[in-house]
Amino acid sequence: MVKRNIEIFDTTLRDGEQSPGATLTIDEKLKIAHQLAKLNIDTMEAGFPIASSDDFEAVKLIAQNVEGPYICGLCRTVEADIQRAWDAVKHSNKPCIHTFIATSDLHLQYKLKKTREEALEMAKKGVRLAKSFTDRVEFSAEDASRTDKEYLCEVIQAVIDEGAVVVNIPDTVGYSQTEEFGDLIDYIKENVENIDDAIISVHCHNDMGLAVANSLEAVRRGAGQVEGTINGLGERAGNAALEEVIMNFKTRPDYFDCDTGINTTEIYPTSKMVAEHTGISVQRNKAIVGENAFAHEAGIHQHGMLSNPLCYEIMKPEDVGKKTQLVFGKHSGRHAVENGLKKLDYEFNQEQLNKITQKIKDLADKQKTVLEDDIIAIADYELNKSSKKPKVVLEELAVMTGNKITPTAIVKVNVEGKQKISTAYGIGTVDAATNAIRNILDSNIKLKEYNLKAITGGTNALADVSLTLTDSLEKEYKARAIDEDIVMASVKAVINGMNKMERKK
Ligand SMILES: [Zn+2]
Image (cartoon, rainbow, N blue to C red):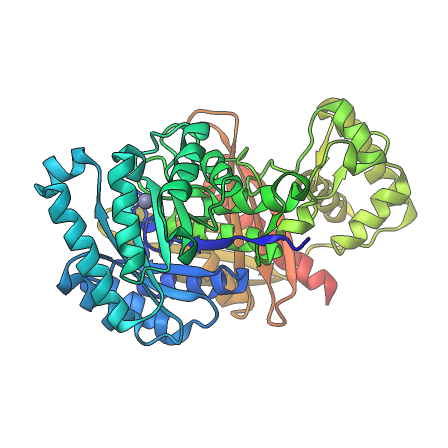
């Protein structure tokens, strides 16, 4: 039997951007939109065009530039809204208008101050107008899960008659329980006569942590589209995390018997991009995309993992586009260590390898798992000890910052015996110091990734900086450094990375 195709509707750029604290510039939205197209979602809700002129411009720009998914604009069932949404999405060759009105008595009475009859008329009129612009019209009954069921079915049937091809059933406030939400989908299927003429969509919020579970249950009961966001961003506690929804289908085909067209190896890159631009980072233990999602730290797991990953791993990190972290335990031999170091671009002689292997084993005894970052630190230490002197040595660093001064750094380094000095500005002190070093050494070098961790709490914690530099050929070099001071740790890490680059040359 052919698997049922479930459409994925991404609203990271609309509902996700409504997350408190998340604002995206137009350029950032376009970048994310291109990445979502690579992920191969079916529909992208690019914004709410009437909300602001920035929102309008972003939707328009995405409609003009991004190919693949339907490009969708949100609007209330009001003429001016719908017209504005159309003016933005019409530039796409796959435009979609998503119009909504609240249907629960609570919202009708207190928010809209409309009767059920008035709201029904507005819904019909709105869909009719949207349909005059484009075929792909989605209608949402806001607060559907708290709407009188009979009235909800009446509204859905009417909008399908007007031409809505997708009818969305939102659990707007994340109130529904899983089985109850599934029952609502069943009820709609039984009581809306023309339901087969439209796709049932669901849009679940995560106020009680059930957004993904409710979405999955709805699919089991016949929903054909799931709405959600990358990293589960969205208003309040957020929306259903699409990466979780997608990987449930992929990992349990025996249970769901359905498929999505998603290119799952783009999940992790998308998640990272969204976190970076929204400034909302992903919790470490978050399913699928959290830093710890595929790391095994318990000793007994570690042993099982090393002999056969399937013992504890139901998904492979590569499946979601995450590079496998090198993980060593005390059972890792010299050969495994040698291979691992090669993958990280290190070369050592036998004596050094023996020393490094011993250090990794010692560390594994203490902390059970030795992760890639630890291995890099051990390898760098061994390299710095070896006879070859590092080419670049930091001699002096001074930074100036405050609320009324542009962050400035003065850096003095010794490059093969010659002193060089440079001053640079930056967005912050780390940026300024990095710019100063680049001025001296090589302005083609770019800082690709920067990670700061505090070792033990408090303001006296040690700063642990790991970063990735790229050279003019885009080759990556990882480096790490620890210091009491954040700027010093960052500068040391950059210089470590530069020395690595030099050694490779
Ligand atoms: Zn929402």
